[in-house]
Image (cartoon, rainbow over all chains, first blue to last red; front, side, top):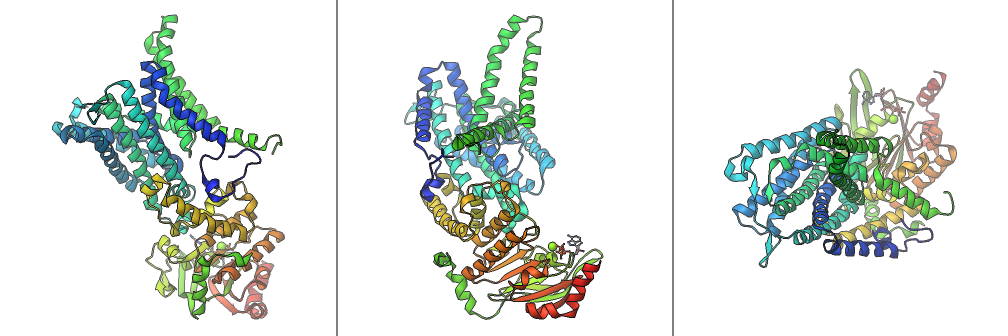
Length: 350
Length: 274
Ligand SMILES: Nc1ncnc2c1ncn2[C@@H]1O[C@H](COP(=O)(O)OP(=O)(O)OP(=O)(O)O)[C@@H](O)[C@H]1O
Ligand SMILES: [Mg+2]
């Protein structure tokens, strides 16, 4: 939203995402910060940042599916897992380079997600949540029971580093840049999708499916498409993950992870790509600071014991999510928009 | 203001030259369990006419709208739109074929702004694929801007410029119904059905909406079917009136004819005495 007195003079301007010089400067600064980050921060913080970038892709997918199209999805980690396994298998069995195996991994996840989307479009709310949990279960069942030569079964898959023109993405810094490039592209694409007729169709079917049908929107196909896009994003994130960790195993993609993804969407704010990014950052930052603080708390209060402290942390984080659901169900992005609106109208109260 | 309407609409004007009924319902019967909502109702909507359907509460007006727009499949009889049978067509296909309707009450996307709502009305005319939306700059953006211009004309026609960026959920009922009309217009329909658009409005809002409906007719030259509960409102608007009572068509004719029809007087006075 523009500050008071700034008005769009053309439809192009009106639709543009970056509308003031301030926004432009902020974006450039953010980008510069992201580029120099590995040279400024220590290896652990770079690793956390890489993690955040990968999660950002997955959570943006969930945001499109859940925040825009209103389809609750407790299977996003499974979709990510499908992408990771497909990428891994393609890289190992067919020697595909990463710039092919990651997109194909995304497509494999998209197909998996679309199938669930199709079966889920006629169900709503709680039962839809249950159906998507089935995606999680099915994923685990398939990986563990398909022939071991396909996806490694319970041993998982071990990958060679991603390579291009003889360069290997081995170092923490190089893989960070790879993730940064892919994530930036996916974020850009997400803004495009949600601003297009597809994004409007997603919000429309979420708001009112009768009225959507009346607008000539194919409600069933639109909801399934939302799953497809959400799963594609998860799959791309999974592919990055496969090349980052270079080891893929089922226990990296559990229901627990899916719930965290949902928490990120909720804390950031439903229905906003920027919100998804904020949610990833905030939740991951809190999680990591707990991991860092944990041992020192244990050292302070040895009588508590490590188990209790770490259990308490999960309870605390769960409490934060619950508090958000109760007090700020529309997330941090909503709060920010309110602030911006009052700034735009300042010094008048309305 | 009306002369500013883009040449996009000239297609519907040439259609007005043909002289045939656009939407025809023939011998429709619709029952819900024991309740007969429509009993052997036939109507034909001519090119470029404003047909009002009136009747007391529960007369079957909404049921008729739902049959005419393909939401319900009548148990007997058939509905034809531009000659083709509606039954068996999915609602979104019927919409693409050029039929637009507004609902009784509001079925509007309250989380979207006014512009977004009307842009959704353009959905059927937009083609950009998901990959092109992903890249956005290029064909997708050009398409957005082109359709945004059409939307802007509608916003001007309905005089809602000042609220174009407001979420519809924050608007009053009268404005919401105007957005609802704008969204239907954005579809560039070849016929427009409106179910009690003025119910729940105050006199001023009713007059505004009546004026906009007349403006729309002049600009688009399309037939409009207007359902109304209150006979007074449609007397000046309608070319022709169909009166329903207890699921049956009890009268049909010009406003003057209908006003004098004893069966209509009985239905309305009867309602008044109830
Ligand atoms: N989906 C439905 N299920 C059961 N009965 C229905 C249904 N829709 C309508 N009816 C019944 O059919 C009859 C006609 O209803 P309808 O809604 O068409 O009337 P209406 O003329 O639109 O009334 P109003 O002026 O209140 O809008 C009523 O008796 C109503 O109870
Ligand atoms: Mg009704």
